[in-house]
View 1 (cartoon, rainbow, N blue to C red):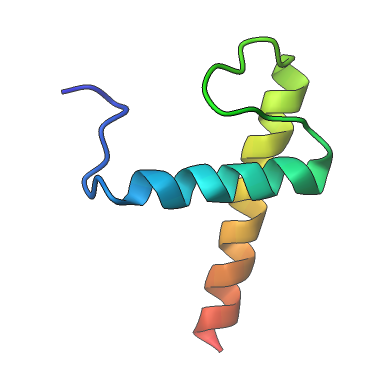
View 2 (cartoon, rainbow, N blue to C red):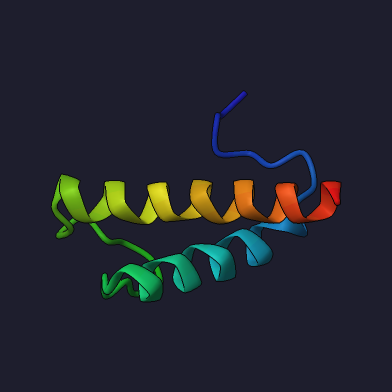
Length: 63
């Protein structure tokens, strides 16, 4: 099984939207589809921002 398969296929659009929002927050210009021209630092900052936002959301829902 490919690691890129989602358990819930409908989640793909939501994840893509979430990724684009995180990229905008850190000032990385993502485009739809292939983004192989990003540096490791840029890609890492997007992923890090996504994790930061997920933790923030989780903490707010615990209250």
